[in-house]
Each structure stands twice: as C-alpha cells, then as structure tokens.
Image 1 (spheres, rainbow, N blue to C red):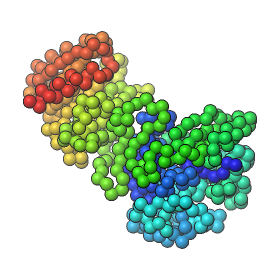
Image 2 (image 1 turned 120 degrees about the horizontal axis):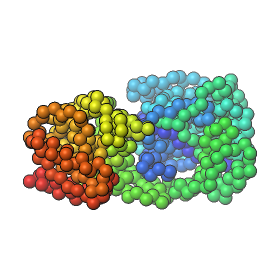
Image 3 (image 1 turned 30 degrees about the vertical axis):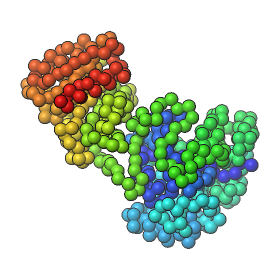
Length: 520
C-alpha cells in the first residue's frame, strides 16, 4: 500500500546559500549531488538522514541565478520537518545565534511549530512530533543528535479544488482525512506524515521558478506497487498528465497532476541512495544519472560549485552582472573572463576554455541585454547594425564590474585573459577603445567591429588573438577589425578555421598555441 512522503523537491537560486541553510543551519546530511535527471546541465541535491532514507529526503533543483517563481494554487508552498517536541527551545536559541528570523513557537493541529524561511523565502516549519523518528539520525553536523531533524513531517498544498484534491490523495496515495482547521484539511498517511490541503480559492496561480516547491513524491514499496498505481491513475478521469514510468537510478517513479494542478510523483523505496556510493561517503562527489551524454569532467566545469559548511569557499559578491566562477582543484593563478555569444550564458564558454587551460580559474559573465528572452551584451537593431548608446552604456557597466570583481575576488589583473565569442567578442573589441586600460590580453572569436565611431586610442601593449570562420557570414568583417586594431598599436595574431560562426574544438589548439607564445 502506498504510504507517506518519499521526498519533497524544491527549486533554489543560489546553491551555496542553500547548502549553508540545509546542511549548515538545519544540520541535514547532503546525501547526493547529481546532474539533473531531466536536464543534465542542472545540479540536483538531496538532503536527508544518515542513509538518505525515503521519508527524510528534501531535494533541490539548482537554477543558479534563475528567475524567481511565485507560490499559488496548483503548488505546495510549505515544507514541514519533524523534530523532538523538547527541541523547540534549542532551535529558537539556534535561530538567535545564527541571526535567523523565526516565528513562534505556535501551535498547529496540537503540535508546537517554529516557522522559518530558507534563503529562497520558502516557508520551512520545524514541527515537534515525538512519533516521527528517523531510523538513521545524522550525527555529522554541529546539531546535537537529540535535537536533530528526524524526517519530513509534511507539506502544505494550495488548491482551488480542495474536495477533489483531497479525494485524489485518498484514492491513489493512501492518505485519510484527520481534521480541519479553517481553510486547511489535514490528511495523514500510514507513515504518519501529513499533507495539509489548503483551500486557495481567490488566490493567484503558482508560477514555476526559484523559491517554490516543484513537487512532492510519495512512497511506493516496489515497482509492482508503482505499476498498480499507474494503471489506476490512467483510468482516473480526474487526473491529468499521467506519465510513463521513469528510471531515476535511485528509485523508479511516475508523475501526475492532481485535479487542482499540483504535481505529484510516486517513487519506489529501492534501490536507494547507496546504490552508487557507500553510506560513509554519501553526497561527497558529483554523480551522473543513467543515460547522461555529457562528460563528467565537462559537467563539473559548468555546474555551480559549492563548499560544505566549514570548508574554504568562493564568497560570491552581489555585482551588477550575473557571473559564475569555476575554480579547478589545482589552480595555476591564471584567470579567463568569458563573454558568451547571443543566446548563451555565463557557462557557455567554460568547457571550451577548460580544455585550453585545465588549471585556469574561469569567470563567466552573463550579458544584461535580452533578445526574445535570450541574453545578449547590447541591443541589436538588425543582424549587422547595433544600438550605439547601448553598446557604450553596457561597456561602461562591464568595465565597472571588472574593476569590482578584481577587488572583490582578489584577482591579479596581469593574469587575466578576456575571451569573447560573437556578440561577447564584439563588446570586447569595443571596450578596447571605450575603456583602453581595462583589457590587455584577449581572444576574439568570430568578431566584427560594431562601433560607428572609434575614439583615437593607443592600444600599444595590448595582445590579441582573432579567430574567424572561413564560411562565417560575419567573417568578411574580420579583416577590417584586425586592420583597425593594428593601426591603433595592438599586437594582433589571427587565424581562420574551416568552419563557420559556430564554436568548436578547432579553436582549442589555436588558443593554446597563442597562450604559449604569450608566455615566452
């Protein structure tokens, strides 16, 4: 019989703040870090008890610097975690010591509740319940074991159709009505956890994004039970979007939206979190789901890095441009500042430059202009004409960002190489004239001049590599760019690859060779 919650999955915007809250403040164990099941370029973290027991698991899809969502009907909006009722006082004191705002304790359905908000402003409730305990309490944090979070207590669902949502939970997921309080009906499973069904009639609808609960997964004992529930859901006219069964490596699962639109998952207890790493080292390294096509080393470069509480870390600063660091295990002190092309983002160039210089620190930056929802560095009027005012204003903002980043992150300006592709390379070649003391070494990939008027600038001491594509529609402008740069005093090396505007491995040896020449 299906019974209880397997895990709750949320979406976070900043992985380091998330780890600091759930592993640091709450003292949960990070039991798994993996590339995403649906999107391998997305980091997925699981927290839980010492063994990652189903029922203790809270997972996060990491949308680093993603757009915020909105809690509303058709979503869960609160996460409840069970602690010993006698531990409420300890957690009140811990909140004070961590300078974390809390509300309560108050009483909900006869239980003491301390309300918090995580870094994404998701409501997290610590609920005193003496009967919900973990079979494997985690004792590896600074939270005393007697006060540790035991497991998931429950979640609150917002729905415009409370009667139908409640009936769906009863019919397919083994929950039964316990009691009601105002607009909330409390549903209880045989495992003892709860789903609070809240009438959200008159609220706004939920919107996907960071800071929201993506779904709640319920427990199926095995694949046979999973298949049986799937067959019943397919026959149920009130369900929507019933899917085929997925192999998630750590469990088999299926997804369905209940009548109010909230996403449910059903997940098997086995094989569990220890299927690919032993209990002792759970969560200590990045792992890949089945059928991942991207190389692990490449994913390590593009997925956001984080440090566990107490470990050395990069302290990210709140600067005007969204950016991402990649710090290699054995950095050599060199730094590449990366400017993507149209439609790219701060991670797009990271795998390519990691191949060029595996020991270099990579600072990828995201342009602030957009076109049809995709990032750019400045506004485009036509494919070959550009908003001059926007180029100048964004160049100024980027120059200020680099100055702040050098100070904030302790970068050595003499060891920085700028690398731009297409739209990003065009901003770079404009920066050379608009802010001539900023860039001294740069690689311009598939670049063209975009300024209508160029200031008189002395670029002596500036070393550049320009790589164009033989069949690139923009390639015919590369000669004009090189001539202008040389006439301004820059040292310019150039090369042509056989392809077009796209990036590829053909660029790697050319950049490597140029860097080696620069070092001698």
